[in-house]
Image (tube, rainbow, N blue to C red; front, side):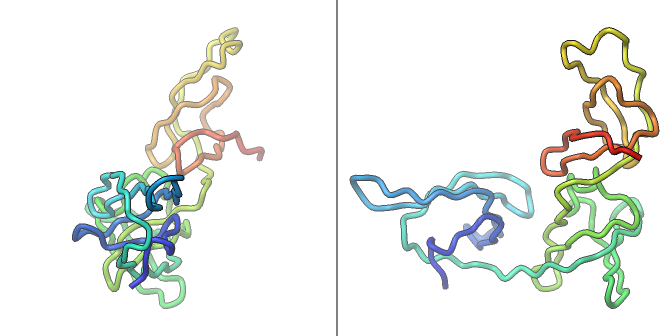
Length: 187
């Protein structure tokens, strides 16, 4: 067993009979009293985020999570189908395990699947993806001084706010962590 000094962002611990992913942590050494670790944990199964404080040196059970690079093939309605690039074995991952990652997945894209044994816990996306705009309204001329935005739908049916100069067919670079527009990709 490891203790609180081994906590890192992204590590997975077994806490309160649930698998929890460490989103943030902070070691605090107050001038008075014992040291402690303040964490923000995400329940992998439900997606719920909680704040938890551990006294320094408390024993924690860290889970060994294996990441495998897989290629996304298609969405069959109830699940997303991924293929192991080495063995060509296919995995069906239920939509509730894919969560918001489905907004950025397009066929042929390589992602990491996180496994605890044979169970898929999460889909780890690249930090940025490039997606084509399929539908957006034309921008209103003269309305650009305020940094105005408009909704745009990309090829994965995800809708986000973009600047007024974006048109149908443009390729956008999107931040997968926040779901926000970064820039228009030059072709």
